Length: 337
Image (tube, rainbow, N blue to C red; front, side):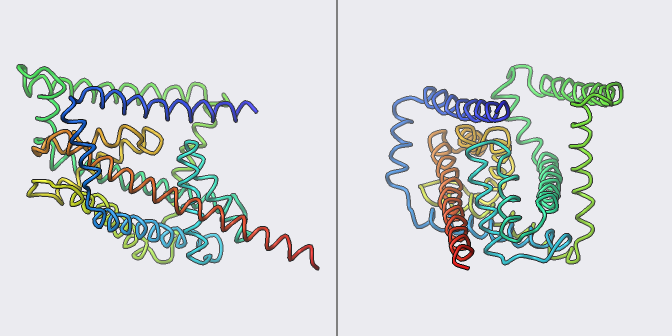
């Protein structure tokens, strides 16, 4: 019962935080900018939005196919449609309650395939661990190549402009030192209180992540696993890129900007449930670097976010309906015997 209350509180908190960002940012816009955003939605080219939607569907199909490669390491691979339904149901559950999606997709697939939940859940952890590692690598590569552009923008917009780069550099140094100190303290706490239940849970959590990462090496089709991963991220990129064409936009390097939106927009999706409220703000800030006005950037952010969210809601609901329908059929068949 206590855990249910915690889940409800978490859900309310993250949705509330998302709504706060929406109203806060909207309040900072003047009447003309607000009207421009409304007009952008009314006049949007829904052909490009549909293409972005299709790219999103393919990204989830590729994720499902890739997950099947992991499942093969613990059991026989289920039909792709079964895995796809489990993935979409998991995403829908995540929109409702943070981190519930991993359990939901594992439980659904375990029930359909009659495979041990622990084994299936282990493959979910493995996939998540790999995705986290891949994203961190992608993030630091992006920072490396775009540090000048992003660093200058952040220093001018969010820090003291007249102190320039030297001020930003000092903050960079402080952040790096703080991360190192916090890491040392974290390791010391883990060792000092290693017999405490909370610490044991934390250690087990990181041990499971490591175990998940190592299980990648048991995959028989490693090359195909990486092909699916890269193809999946290309579909994510296409989903954002195609959304750019839905409204009038004066931008020469659309693909480059779409890539940056993908990388930094993902942070918003990670920190707040489904990226509600924060994702469009991040998109508008990234696009502002390249000379796109706030209203246009914010509009594209909302369009890209809505494509992802509506996709999850539609296919997630279909997945739950299909599972319940199948379960009723199985129950009727069992009673008729």
